[in-house]
Image (cartoon, rainbow, N blue to C red; front, side):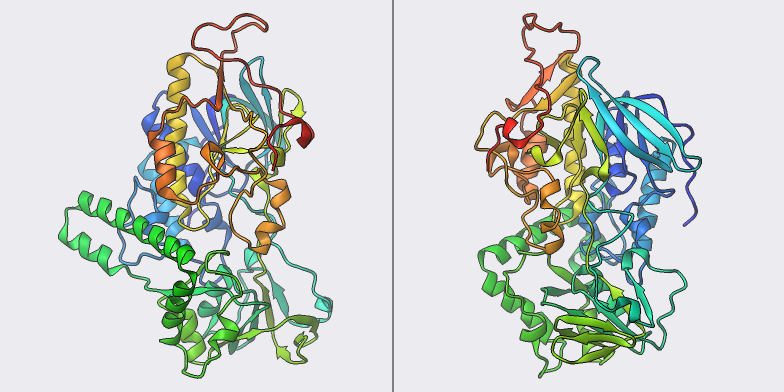
Length: 523
């Protein structure tokens, strides 16, 4: 993929500043450009390339773990034969989206957001940027500040300390920083981990390496699923293009929804279905219960997808194997396990997870008071209590990320329309109920999520405060329910302090609190 040149100098003032040029930032920019053509906006990206995840990760086999009929945008349907695509294909799709919709001039790559400060007196954010090419500091003011940064640390992944790692004579690599010159041909490779990265990486290395071992502390659920959606392709042959696009997307969303709902309502049935798909490929005597039967229920942690059962085929042919055990230490020639066994390795891949950071580690304050993200409660999973004129994109953990991005972009435009129509300047979610808040930002029990729970916002159990993992519920509240919600405080900057408010306006937002006790949200 050719390098992308930034779209000129960053404007000094814009209506909306989008941080991040991955799936979320590009999708949000499309909605602003098409639904609000008079709105000025810019996209700033710390890296020197667009694409986010799909430009960063370059390990062998990197691909989507959800289908492109839903991971693709609603406004740019995925029409290729295979429903699951590699990282390069997805990156190409994002570049096509940017070019087809004229978004490249709005991109400003190599600009890292350092901090953002909101002033209630002006109703605007002042955002500090670092231009990475020459370390120049810049400032941009905006009315709305939109975070499309994702949720993990782009600088480094999570890798626990392993005793004896300095003694190992081979190569240790984390998938987030895969060396371009790493050659695994003819080598023994051990991949530590059993999440989505390991499940996609191992089949790609199998047949190239002498042998690949997936070393896991405990099993994960892995679903063997066809790479091609034959129903979708049949619909494309039978229906006009636009009708096929709608039908394919609707059916794909419904399938994901029903699969998740079945797994939660009938976990034992879902376990048996997963097992059936595995045993149809694995050898008859394979110890499935040892390596692929977790102690938790399906979707307590994210479900991994093996397209066309490729992981199971690699195991069946002997090119790959699974070891379920705990690591005692690294040795000069491999890994010693607590069981006493040692696995030989030339290359060790620590597919041990991600480091999570909220909103790109940006230092944010409101009227000089620093925002503690954990003190905030989510509002419709797009805004945060006490933070004015701020919105963010955060996709689903049980479905395609982009489904939520499209809904969030649509809602942002509806909210801006209402602000303009009523002559307001500032909108802030306010939670006055002390029983609301304290719930998790996500509903999975994965260790990498638990490790960072205390730095992310919290959620409530219902109403606008919940972090829904349900596209249909979110579609209703983000696209159909009235924007003018009682939980939102709308104000006009021109209103002098202490004066009576004109008809239709509301009281100004309170200051962002310091300690948790000063914000009534409870647990």
